[in-house]
Image 1 (cartoon, rainbow, N blue to C red):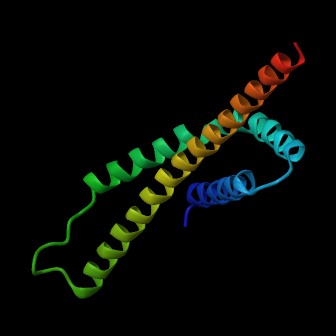
Image 2: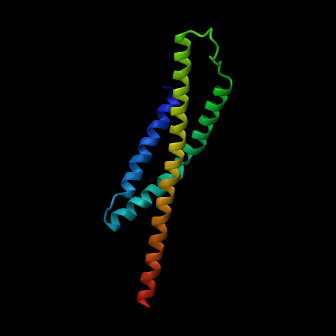
Image 3: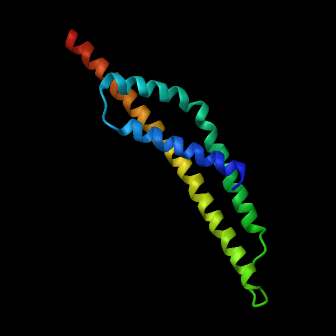
Length: 129
């Protein structure tokens, strides 16, 4: 596996861990502190979206310019190699799509918690009046 796919795999694993931590029930104070920390991390972590997009374009380009092994003159080893390359490309597409989707989910979770916190502050002000 090339370096870019290792990076994408580690980022995806970190996103999964963050999503699990954010969705687990925890005390309000801890949850809001965690949300503010993750919100600070989200902006620099946005690099994953163009990075995954570039990797998807690379997969597409390689797929369009790959030698096809569909004739009868192909050996069994060539067919196996071709199928292995196709499976790796499919795996990498799923990896890219998952990384973008999880980034978006974490972003929305943080945004919802921030909106809830603002609404709670407004409700607290109205109760004090």
